[in-house]
Length: 338
View (cartoon, rainbow, N blue to C red):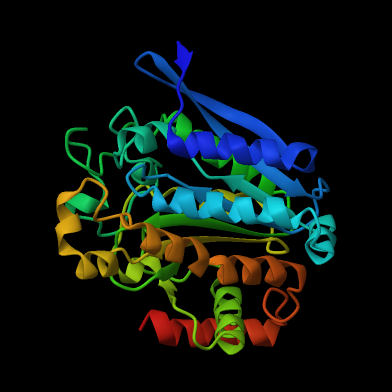
């Protein structure tokens, strides 16, 4: 069994070298595929205290959607340079933690496939059952030869379990945490999705989510995102973030807040400009032209920075009084669920 490199993994290893002792790096799993071994790296920056707020980035859950991994790697490149001189960022990191798992599904990224090496769609691989999830894309157990194959949901794939371990160890212990999972391939507009994906009901932190959305809207009224529950677009089974959110709610009281978000980059816009890219393996999910890739790399940094700062100053959205929470809950229900 030999280690195997591909461009995104080589880039990640260069970034890890750039970070040096400023970051903590761990190989959280090793995935065996044919005669090769692929590592899954987790990189953390900032405080090691368990009670600081945490912002975590995950990419490449679907290997074909590698633009998510590349955006995270670009952001890590920027941070590696800022750490040399940006005292404001250094001060932030003394009071918070950043976590990066940019290549969750390394075999899928290497092969250019949505699934992992076993033919399993990792975002359909948890035991959560979608309510009314009857479409093929909602998750299927027929065959790994078709997309959206769920696999054995009671014995989840190693990649899915590795992601869950990071969340359990790095985010669940924090009183306030946000996970951002980057994907592509749906619509012409970038969407910022929150739970649930498996049922059309509000999740327990819907009031805080709406308060955070309104803060973002107020500070950046011309931002590019459509912010909504994922279930408004489609309902699926096996969503890892629904699974982790349910685990969190069962384990902890309401004094802690865990907010899993999915950034779904609207790749149909890239196709509209170059329909011929539809005939490329990556064309439906990845901007093929270099200038478009560079535009995507930089367009989300404002969101990343906002989320980091919102965790450090949560008073206006995460710490709602009882009456405020009730009002935001009612407002969210009117906006998204009626």
